[in-house]
Image (tube, rainbow, N blue to C red; front, side, top):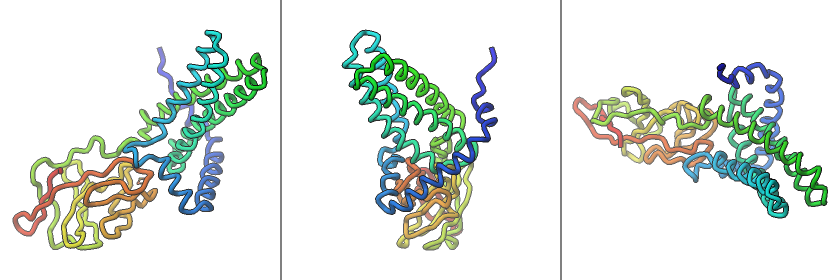
Length: 284
Ligand code: FES
C-alpha cells in the first residue's frame, strides 16, 4: 500500500502563498493597530505561560464537542446535541485565534501548510456555526448534514495539523534533543566574557552563549526553542535576550521565557572559573 503524501500535495498548492501573504499582512496590521494590548493577547494565545503552545490544547475541545454532538444526534438527543455543537463553536473561535497567533510567525512550507490547515478549519467553523443557527431556527433537517460536513472538514484539517507538528516540527522545542555537557567542560576565555556582549561556543551538540550580567558570568543555550533562531545575533539588554527571528525574549540567567512565540525555556548551564583563565560549564 502506498503511503499518503500530504507533504507532496501541499508542495503542489502554490496558490496558497499569496493568500498566506495577505493573511499575515492583515494579522500584522491588526497587531500594529492594536498596539501593546494586541501583542499581549498574541503572547497569551501563543502559550508561554502554559509551558507549551496553547493551540493544540484548545483544538481538542471543539472536535470533541462536535463529535459528541453527532453521536447525540444519532441517539435522538437533539437538544443536548444543539448545546454541545454551540459549545464546540465557541471553543472553536478560541482555538482559531490561538492557531492564527502561532501561524503568524511561520514561513516557507510550514506557513503554506498552516494556511491550508487554517482555511479548512475556518470553513468547518463557519459550517458548524451555520448548522447551529439552522437547528436553533427549527430547520434541523438542513442543519444536520451541514454539521456533519463541517465535522468532516475539521477532521481533515486536524490531519494537516498533525502533519505540521510531527513531520514539519512546527512549534516543537528545538532544544528537545540537545544534550549539554554533564561534566565540567572548557567553554570560553573569561577575558572574552563582558557585560552586554554574547560570546558563543559549541560543546558537543550544544550551542552555548556566555555573557556577564551584573558582574556574574552566565551561560545558556544559543538556539531559540521556537524555530531555531540564533539568540547571540539578537538584542541583549541586561539579562534579557530577544530572538532576532520572531522576538521571543528569554532570561539568560534562568532560561525562562519572558515573551512568546517561544513557549519552552532555553537550557542554562552552571559556570566556574577553570584552569588558564577559561570558563567551564556543565548542564544545570
Ligand atoms: S525562532 Fe521564532 S522567536 Fe526565535
